Image (tube, rainbow, N blue to C red):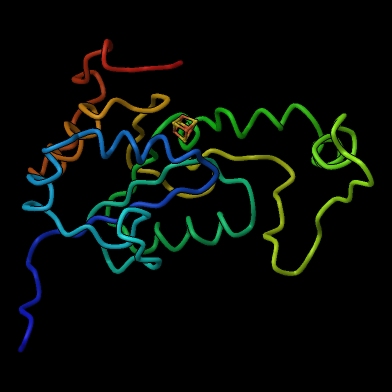
Length: 186
Ligand code: SF4
């Protein structure tokens, strides 16, 4: 049996240094996900568990850039995506993962693995299989050209839906068209 290639635009998503909350918010579009899959093919994504993106129209990136593997992944998505969106405050500003930027990387590692009250004979993990941490956490626009930012922690599902459907209709929505009441910064 031959499979006819889909002519629908493709989207991909990934999360870097994030908590998955932005992807949960994407799923909070609820039954509209059925409309979304009529409009697009969802390719590489934690939702599909496909690891590498093909060429896609839109890539949604959750999370800040915390380690060398994140940098590599982000460059791959940038290379493959016509339009790259930083999704959520961690991707847009650094947000929670960037709180470690107030300290040196060494101080953070010592606090996490050696100095906590519950630690006995602690050791800072270090091995060839572990991605090397960046000295400072970076937001997505500081690493690659970013075409659009959707702030919020997490962004409201209605905002994600609005931006995606506008882009798929060939329009880049001016941020001022998004009602302020839909943004969450908690
Ligand atoms: S923006 Fe908020 S919900 Fe999204 S990954 Fe960061 S902490 Fe999680």
